[in-house]
View (cartoon, rainbow, N blue to C red):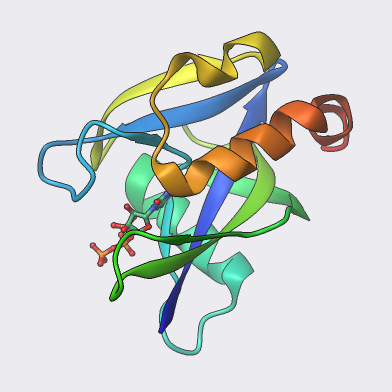
Length: 137
Ligand SMILES: Nc1nc2c([nH]c(=O)n2[C@@H]2O[C@H](COP(=O)(O)OP(=O)(O)OP(=O)(O)O)[C@@H](O)[C@H]2O)c(=O)[nH]1
């Protein structure tokens, strides 16, 4: 069974937000885009808005949905990571679950150790950087 997970590529001042998974989370120490599992009956868009509120305490405005990344962490754990571009609509970021954050520019994207499922998304982001970053206002 594939576990659908949404994540937000939050853009501000030509940089994107990466957050590090804390010790209490599986995959501790890996960097990711904030987000989480889609709940039963929830749409991907409602999921990402809810997760960002829970994890970062902010409201976001969604841009486009980007190509999903399927990754098998094990036979039982296969995730489908569905990214949305987004900007901050209101609020100030607080880390309720993660232990570090970093704003990364186009040439800094691979300076952190991404969770394996994120790597195709980060590569896509780098390749389409200008249109994604400027495509959201
Ligand atoms: N949110 C998020 N999860 C990711 C990313 N990359 C990645 O492999 N994952 C994996 O996708 C799963 C999402 O779980 P989560 O722990 O963030 O979601 P959640 O808050 O809904 O989980 P929970 O309520 O079961 O604790 C985890 O196994 C996590 O390691 C990413 O960029 N963002």
